[in-house]
Amino acid sequence: MAKRAESEITIAGVRLTHLGKVLYPEQGITKQDLAQYYLAVAKRMLPHVARRPISLVRCPVGRQQRCFFQRHASEGMPRSVKEIAIPGFEDSGAYLYIEDERGLISLVQMGVLEIHPWGAPISDPGHPDRVIFDLDPGEGVRFAEVVATARLLRAKLHQLDLDSFVKTTGGKGLHVVLPIARRHGWAEVKAWARAFAVAIAAASPERYLTRVAKAERRGRIFIDYLRNDPTSTAVAPYSTRSREGAPVATPLAWEELTPVLDPAAFTIATVPKRLAHDPWAAMTRLRQRLPVARAPAAPPPKRQRRAMSLAERR
Image (cartoon, rainbow, N blue to C red; front, side, top):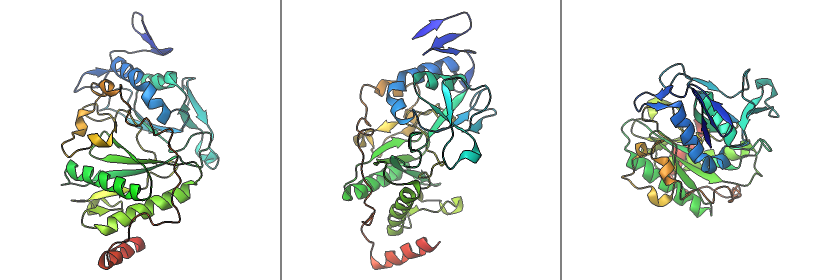
């Protein structure tokens, strides 16, 4: 696992340098601490990250300074961080991906604090295997309301015989994730996700919206279906975030999702203690087909149906 030298350490076959570099100054978390965290969660995390195109937030000198976004290959990449040309995106350049624990630790050596995978594998990048709804609360919205919204989406999906999973995002929101069979293209999946989100928002327009404009979000929850696009990635399960507190995007069991849940409690210090149980154990085995021919939610009353029509036209 780990072998010490005078000024470096080798973890998962990766030479980790500048071990004492502080990446999260508020907690004093160093590069070595971060590498040990990712080593601990690798078994749970890799099924959702390995062999998928990834986008990265790199903060080589710590989360507060000169962070930048990267999803394409560049010079000096470790061999364990690989690249692939994606059909239809050749003009953008090769995309990055990793295959294993070694690749994950190499990202730490690169100063990566966030990992955002595609919703499709490199073997079939045109067909996603999950649908993601990002519940993003506006100003004045309590987290308990986000919890209630996630449970509402779960119930609506269950009415369509679809099982879903939930995770914290390392921020104020939640992700509701629906594993699907890789038989739908991106456009079809995004259209389905949009219809589902719009139906939910139209039934309670005072609580929800599906438009991006931040000026409209105060007191409401943005049901973001736009993550269902090849390059609009979502943060990976067990990924750290480049935010104060060293928060982690953490898979939850639905039973854990209560109004008193504190998403800030999931950090690199606490998440490894949860690994004995995997609340997303069924995620990689479950493959569901979207009920394209069926409405994603029950039709609202007449007055609310008119609101939906207005939302659809905007």
